[in-house]
Length: 267
Image (cartoon, rainbow, N blue to C red):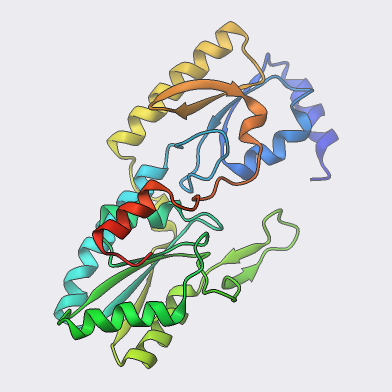
């Protein structure tokens, strides 16, 4: 922001026909002022899976795999040491990573920003599990998750950033609170940038390839001002503006939320 003229001048010096842009909400929000001046083809890429206009972004499946593998590994410790393990995931205001990773790992509890949780109901759920003889449980919580009537935990602020808040701290706060209330030892685990650091899964490789081929075809055809998106099981084209809308959040009653409920998890 504030360097638009400098960016346009640099663009003109390159004398290119157009630009294929792969990125997330920050990338496309930054390009919004230039969509009338620069021919652009958009490719959605973010582990958060929160871009409007597409049902899936590459990077997301890999992040979910990191969460699932981590929960699988931590479950043995939870049961062996009779502990609650609270695993904090990325995602900002969208709970897709916690939701997908929580389902894949059969997490006992999944907390999402879109579904503020009731502290009394969470205590009741965990208390019943303890009374039933459960030695350890694993909770997957999105960094933006919050209790009803409370704000999300903000770890720090980044000045002049379009997304100034950096969420974090829910795993630590929740662990200390649960341990105090339930007399059940609890430990926080923050996965952080491990979710961004693994080689891509096969699913992400297939999706990246399919979108890359389609973006190449669009450039050859001169189909600028459009984006590759994933809808109804296949890669399709859509107006570029559809990637520039508000973050795509987990809707109430989403089928994955219902899956967790059917598994007996708290969500």
